[in-house]
Amino acid sequence: MPRYEYTAIAGNGKKVKGAINAETPFAARKQLRVRNIHPSSVTEITSVAEGKRMLASPFHRTSKSQLVDFTKQLATLLNSGIKLTEALSVLTLQTSDPRFKTALTEIRDRVVTGESFTDALKDYEDYFDVIFVAMVRVGEVTGTLGDGLKTIASFMEKRQRVESKVLTAMVYPIVLVVFCLGAVLILTTKVIPTIGEQIKRAGQELPWITQQLMNFSYIVTSWRVFILLGAIAGVVFLFKRFFRTERGAYLRDRFLLSLPVFGPLIKQRVVARFASTLSTLIGSGLAMAESLRVVAETTGNSLMRRAIQQARERILAGADIATPLRESGVIDPAIAHMVAVGEKSGELEAMLKSISENLEASTDIVIERLSAAVEPLIIIVMASVVGVIAYATILPILRISAMKF
Image 1 (cartoon, rainbow, N blue to C red):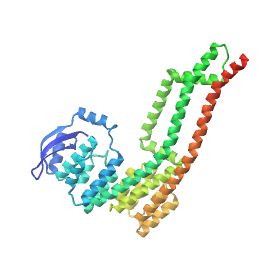
Image 2: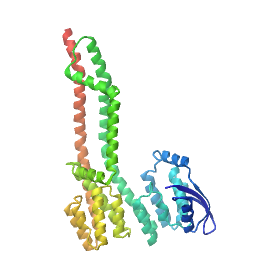
Image 3: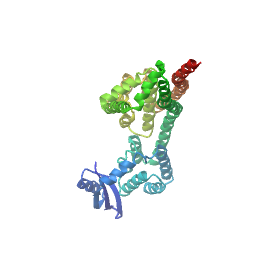
Image 4: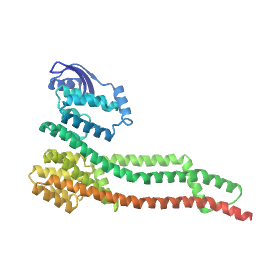
């Protein structure tokens, strides 16, 4: 959708500037008049400027920690009695990310003109997801925006800690694999070919294993490798396109959940994320049906999304939510039973929070065990590969040495 920059006079007589998304300039002016803003100029943002923003975005993404800090600071300022527009002005001045600073400036200007904070955030999905917007809406309606933002910050920090644990557990194995692959690549492309050529010049026949490594080296160092890499890239691209479809995402998620070792771990993370998010939204005062809609958009698993959508339909029809969750195949019967008990007793928020904490603790244990098991396994496999290459390198040299004696 095109984006327009405008200069206008607000209802209070002040001159304001900002940006707005609209299909046409007429539609942009109409939106502004609905907000009691009288535009004097509306100009479409040029494709060059938009191109610069798009090019800058991969290298200037606002970090999650910066968003958490912004949310916490905004909550503190609002709870201290400072007005929202003043708080946004203060935080805009101290923001170092130029793109985020521009977004905050536009949001502040829209709030100044009388637009709600919720509506202003909707156009900035790169920074504020559907959960953030939904909880801000509740805070604005109930007059507890400061407390709501504090809850959002805590929720974001908790999610960030969970993600960092997984990434931390993956760092050592990834570094080990990259280092070993680099060593293997050097041996097969530099050392083996040099030794093989010298042995051939000496009129000696290469051992079978050395010859196979020579053949592999020719493939890796020739133009054929580009065909292979191109084919792999094409297959990956086609799979990514397919997985973006509803059918592809469903098949992918069902396959991941059926994996023997990682399937249960993925399932625990999906359910823990669902329970934590739903508990937070319910605790913030959002209605159950709306909470389920938001959770469905952020679950990250198509099987879970279907189950949540079915649960929302049952809620709107006056039924329970535990049955579709139980039938989804993602949530274990015991957890679904706990959800049903919490729903009947009126303690669903507390029950979901307990489920989330238990699953996260269990997930941490599983990740630690997998990390402890995978690291030595990688070392053994890579040591075996390097050993075979070393054997293929030394064997012809030993044969030549033996012939000389």
